[in-house]
Image (cartoon, rainbow, N blue to C red; front, side, top):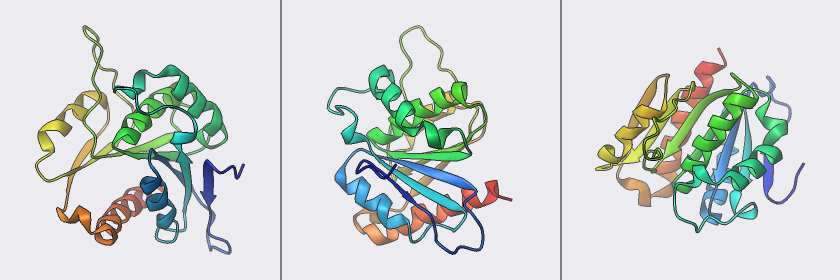
Length: 195
């Protein structure tokens, strides 16, 4: 369970047990380090699960990665123990596309267990020609840098539930403030789910 590609964090001695898991899909070593650093800042009711996606497949192939059934099937199989209980998914860049694909698959396998999808700095998925996009029955929060809004609007077509677009501050180069803002958003959204 504690393989080098998968890492869990729970708060020992916490007053309340974790009520929801946040599964973060890391598609780079930087993202993996970023997510691991979140473990001390997330609220106690959130269990953090970081997944090093690089260990499961080739991410150099062109998008859309949600059409990579082998990678998606591998992730679903590996994360099965986490997906059958309440969870949220987070991915940025390529990881956002994978989080979307994972949410679609989980809806069929474990209906109602994916409680929220967070996507950051990723264009909306693209539907195959002649195919209408299938909407998720999961709330989506799409986070984007300044000036990126037009590329994010397509996420509306992929959610049957509410979608929230949040412009992030331009200080992304300042990692601590950027991470603090992401953690505030995640804690707020997942905190509301725990009420």
